[in-house]
Image (cartoon, rainbow over all chains, first blue to last red; front, side):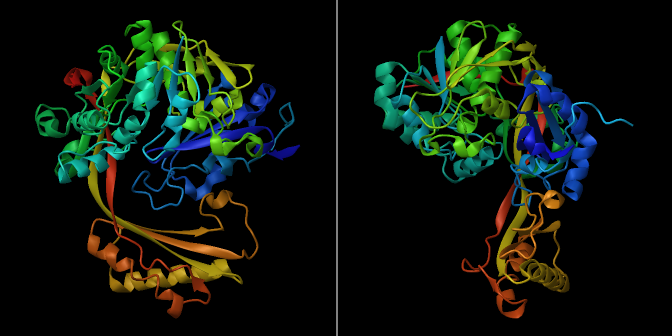
Length: 110
Length: 444
């Protein structure tokens, strides 16, 4: 069953230099394993395409039912150098909510 | 138990917030965070123009406004409003609120020491790029070490009503009152990590009480009167996040989680001058309406190096916009962009980058944006950045003419050509903490 990430998680994003971080938080703790399985660093990198030039790193916070993504070279130089309207990456979290994920509670059969 | 409130998440945050925190219920400490990474360069420029300036100018009038209640009720104010001139800031507070005792924390400012530090082999490479600081040394506008909570706690120990620091960490503003009130020591890593995480939760003001919150945002009550956060801290390192009764907004574990993840790097290594906090140890519990209990926090020892925040003159930029209306608004904006780029190339101008966005199409979300067929209007936004002011200035004259000599229905040019802005860039570096000696001065 394919659903947008927004149905099971909320997000907040911010900047550190030219890097964006996105926190992805499961509404229900029981859905955290789905986040871990579906929202991989590779899929996040692909979702943003050429908006993110660098690598994407994922960290896990099972205690909060949350993942933290660091998107490198994602703000056109970052801080005052950036020419973008969203130079602080405030809306990256919202953009990720459109990611299509498989919400079945067991991994798909190969 | 002590109550620590945060009434300012950055310089420019809501002016009424700290006043309401004082007036609408009990608090013991009022923390005010004024300094973003780039703020130091702004205050440095102000100080160069006028030696009596160089601090957050909103701060002294605010203290004058709340002087009477904080004195009567013994509320202590802790702020990094000092910028690059904390003494001048303290004098202005004393001038406007003569009854208050003011202490300042000094020692973070490295602006006059950079040459000496470089000469003695401190390379202070850029943490992001690895370049040595010597490559930009003639363009440095400000340089400050991030100092931690212990020097701020030392200032509270003088009995001051108002403590003013320069570049201390945002989290230190909440941790320092705990160190002061509970007598925590530098080797109590778990406690220091707890106070640091309390500081992280409240340092962005209303971002932990319902501001900028995605969770059912339309149901968040009375945002016009949003309450700013209060931490009720215990000496064992547990604390409750809340806000004054009757205020707007929402405190809930979902909201607190969003703020915990805000501007977070490696969650197990949240590095401050006081400790390394482990965000994977945090336990949250909703224990009542508008009350979230935080416990279980673990931490490790402070690092041997301090982060240094350096700002330097990079060059110039300008960003101009035009709006195109339906029909084919997006295609018209794209055509206009191509024309501008062709004309800039013909002029032989040199830029580090030309960047074009289409607001209403995909400016914020890029390829992740939902596409709309033939939108009602699109804003074309073209930015250029470069070392030379002259070329940037020439660019600013290339947009408005398009209204007459480019694609049809161009508008939104009423403000004329865009301003040329100086770009002050940020240079994060590390420095051995033995180079930093802080001290406290009481300003009478």
